[in-house]
Amino acid sequence: MRTTRTFPMEQAMPRSPASSLLEAIESFFRHNHDLKPLTRRTYRGSLRRFSSFIAGGRIEDVTADTANAYIASVSDHRYMARGDAAVLRVFSKWLVRARILDLDPLVGVATPRVPRSRPKPYEAKVVRQIVSAAAQTRMGPRDRALVLLALATGARPNELRQLRWPQDVDLGAGVVRIREETSKSAAGHREIPLDPQVIAVLDEYVRDYRPNLPGPLFLNARGGPLTYYGFMAIHARLRDRLRDNGVEGYQAYRNRHTGITNFARTPGMTLSDVQYLAGHEDPTTTRGYIQSRTIAQLRALPSAFTQAYGRVV
Image (cartoon, rainbow, N blue to C red):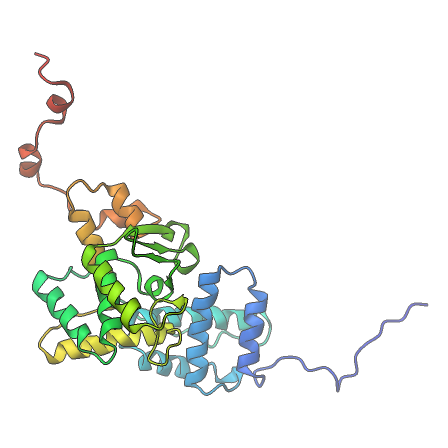
């Protein structure tokens, strides 16, 4: 007769609310092994920041109060606060599915809102003030190159943070390459031409200030890679510096909107061109940057029919 072996009760250690939060986070990633690399890094960053906020702790420390307190602590970084809140909600739902918790502790936690309206692009005067203020920081050559690259390419902050030297930046060819794994979707893989001013500033940064080693293009003060939080902190310090000088409204993502808007305003640039350069998966998103002409403006344009066929009557 076949017998079923069982483990002694004293050896069984089922996970419970008193279990380690850090161990539960690692288990969460093992169970969600099919996450895209960028999504995995984003989730890991959010959960790491939250666990650091509550000093590690136990699963039972994942409560609405601690989540709301953490979100409030990063509220100055609106997009990060919104993203982290969403990741915490995903994690808490997994704790219920994994039968570690009976009820979702974050069901009542609200995801912070961000402005629905797209920020306006910077005016020329403000762009000059931004570039000047960036050059005056402790890491001036790096920050000036970073800001100029953001304004001129319209790349996402996290795409810029993960650029690698020299494979992603070809100063001779005048292009920057955004890799798919650092972007939000397959549409993020693209090459963006560089403005001559950006090439000159990048050349100065990598030749005269950055250590002559392959790796991340933008390094922290110790010569190491920048975390997402560290990268966004550069923009936060620049925002404060500009505010002290009477310039309001600086945002990391506003640099991207400015760059894409400038592409859309360039004569001869098609919707498809702007969509490619912006890394948009859906052209509907791109259309938001392209202003429709009024009927009076359309009437002032040359006739498409006559341009195509000449006079036929």
